[in-house]
Amino acid sequence: MQATSKISSSFINPLYTIGDRVQQGRIIGINHVMRGWQYTVLNEESKRTVKLAESEIKLLSQQEREARILAEIDSHMTQLVLLQKELDTDLEISTPFGEIQPPRKPSNPINGTSRLSEPRRKKVSA
Image (cartoon, rainbow, N blue to C red; front, side):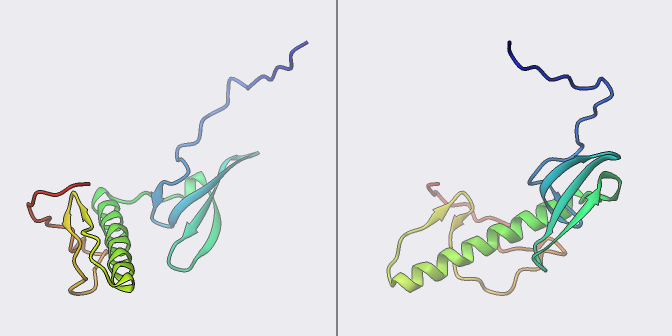
């Protein structure tokens, strides 16, 4: 006989998913508890996790979300430049945003400015 399981008709799916960016950080875990869903959120600045009920999760505005994503891309691109310098060779790294240049000034993810905010129009390969 094959094992079966039944899910209550009152079962509600979680509102958020793993990887979602929220004001408290990034969701890295989801557990179902007696009172609903509990989310494990990683604060990427402090590297600490916190468990929050679904009602405690605060969403980012679209502008905040885009600013955080651009800041993260900017950080990764800076790491690429530093690794390329460590190799002491030109790898001709290019992206849809254009060629990767060393950072000119620190990015400010709060107001949405990034060296990626206004991509230069060049023929590039991804």
